[in-house]
Length: 307
Image (cartoon, rainbow, N blue to C red):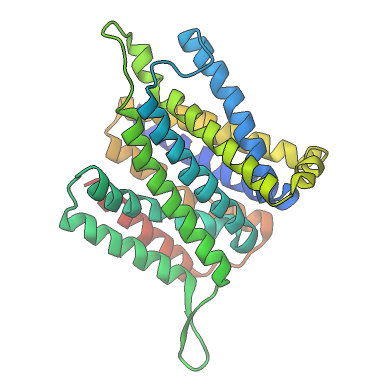
């Protein structure tokens, strides 16, 4: 009866594991090499999935318009968004990095209104205010003279904001790209269900190309060579890829087949809460009650988007 909800909770746990493994991989490999390796592994896993489902390891029925929008989505969502996310792991840790990912729904709501003509209700505006209030409560503190300041470094906060905004923008652009497929009239249900995987592969191609270009322009290819000899780092990024872009995405698509998308999305957004305890046990960081309260308030804001 609650299969969709159970799957959604499993997805939230997988994405929690992804954040922890990604944070550790970034510390060992560096942000740029970790993202390049993750994109490469994602493409391999997606190619195998598409080959099994459609008989072709490459995306089928994607028009030029679909490639354009999905590639743009990959550049913004992966190259900009994930680059910021992985760097936020380095500067403020995966726990706070995931907290800023609650900015993705407000970003998607605003861009959906601007680019797709989607309705932006008063409830959506309230949800944005609540989400931002929760984040502010978590990261702001009062100094000795009563001045309000961030307890996190500004660089980390900016990376976190960039990560949330990048993911939200990438999601909207992906939606535009997915509506541009030219499916044949006799397309099987499998062809329809596999579209998100095909779209993810196109985004991954763009992401890999973007990260490689940045590495070449900044002359940091030696970092990738060093990373490929770091066994522990490679094991962490491999697990992050398995639990995130592959299993996480696959099960999230399955979850919405068995329950309402709003319920599934809200449950899957629990990662900032689920990560608090394992992050504390691994890194022994101090957890303040207001940080937990702020995280919960942010998730309430996310939930309001789906009411």
